[in-house]
Length: 129
Image 1: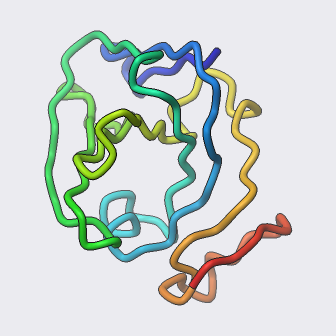
Image 2 (image 1 turned 90 degrees about the vertical axis):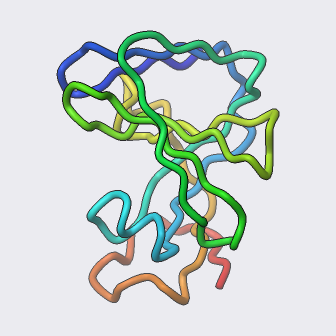
């Protein structure tokens, strides 16, 4: 089970899981959306996911070239989860919004060819260009 919330606590989510994947994405789109070197995300089935509170969506073209939909709290702006149009049965949870960040155990890093040199992780992950 995964639960999470935004910084101010106005928006929340819950998923019974299971985690389908746990990755760190280093595409330029994720870098710009997060203001960091990459976004740690885990994927869960959309059927297992519910959210509440003041949530708004922002649509952009993701690093894959497909539409990316990011969901964030209207009150504080915290990124919470993604609902990619290219995978309508999937929700990607931003690991930093999890109530217990230990629930995130990444196994792979994506778009490492776009990763800034300062964003290299100490964890041994399978890397994909």
